[in-house]
Image (cartoon, rainbow, N blue to C red; front, top):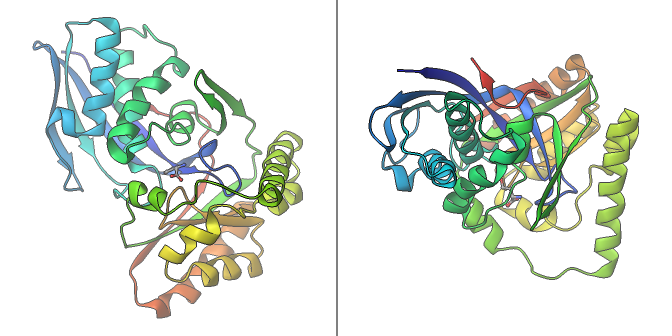
Length: 306
Ligand code: HSE
């Protein structure tokens, strides 16, 4: 039976100023998934290493995303999925998106690529709907396509790949507390002031322009979020200290990764990203919360065979 093992990248959604529309794909953080064609129609999940997640197909984001793809094709094919989870659920680094995208990419590959990678986004979004109640695309789009992506619209779906300047590195701290995306969405306000909207879309435009121009200073000063961060940061012990330490150590800017609790900083060059990691580690150790720190460049490939 045909089989493939894939790397399923972690992602930073929102990237500060682009709530629900912007995301980037990480090279050094991700899961591995093995998908094998079977003789029985449908999808089974026979193994999940590293995390206590449901094996039942309709309760697992990989199963749900894969079924959405098979239903669209009216396919009688069958697949078994084994997942080696390295990204913790509720970390803010796109754990559910990694599983959803890995499943649809691998199944599509084993079926001979009836869909383009971009066409897989809506199927992966069904996994996000199961995970958070909202079929947002800002994690699954960069996980599939790689690099930075902009979700201009979800209805109709319009996703644009943006350039990823080569020297951009992310430092991500993951404090070991779980924040469910559904919970951290519930606390958000449904309205915002015109003043905040102007600031936010100024920054979003600035960030996109900075990516195209490879203007690291412009990228840095655009990494500001006056809409979501003031509310969600309250859920993250030490957020202010982490951000301040990162900026003092030379980071271009940063903010909450996805819906948290992970916090990211972007830097120009790996050496700077390492310095930022040291500064964050020093400031966070006294908090008494265990944490992981990842340093990663941007993954330009998305999901790939591994
Ligand atoms: N845009 C989503 C949110 C991403 O912030 O709720 C979740 O990872």
